[in-house]
Length: 75
Image (tube, rainbow, N blue to C red; front, side, top):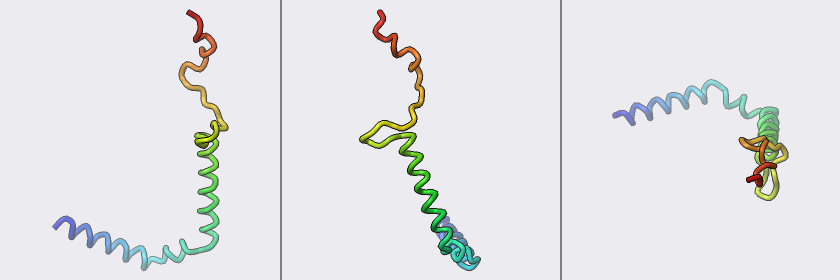
């Protein structure tokens, strides 16, 4: 019975979305350009922060213990 109610709620929600006209707004060409531009910016940021499998990251974060790496060979 719970799944039947959930299905009815989902279909009512989909009906509201379709009848409200939000799909017409999302179909605008300028919104496509904004979405593609946002994806490109996020991917470039991820490459800068994480790097690729073939390169190091462009930005180096100081991790814990990086201050004393030059003293690791001291006994």
